[in-house]
Image 1 (cartoon, protein in one colour):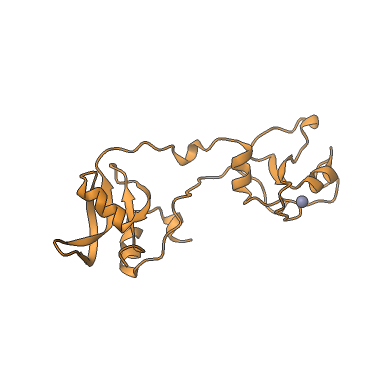
Image 2: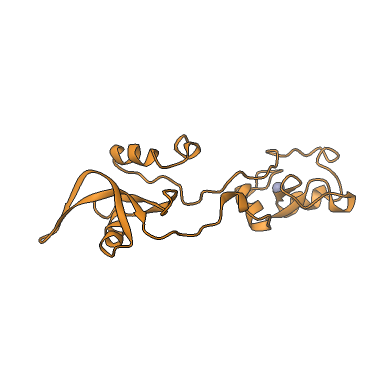
Length: 176
Ligand SMILES: [Zn+2]
């Protein structure tokens, strides 16, 4: 249990940062790099010491992180937004590229709402046309992602942990 249970790590400002193993959380506390914020009664015993398993810890120095709103427009991030899936045929082969919905040659901009993931064959098929001119349909309407929270895949844990974590995580993540 000690190895599989996770702790939520908060920034100095109490913003959630990521999850780490409870073991790592305890090491951080022992090294005075973090403090325990909440624990829910689970106790870890070693021959010489007994301590409460932390459900939430807070680092004691501010960790700088890029804000979700700073996601840069890039091919890599378009791929992530579209889940590495061609937005015309749903294909996920390794020929994926990006496609301008309104072609560049016709004034299409390189931005979040005009660029989507496409496989090579859809990209070729579409050519210099718009999707409707070619009878193609987008699987979803492209938009700027509001945020990427790659760290916040909530780990499995005792329900008491999940309840505590819920207090510190954005609602949009809890409800997933
Ligand atoms: Zn395709």
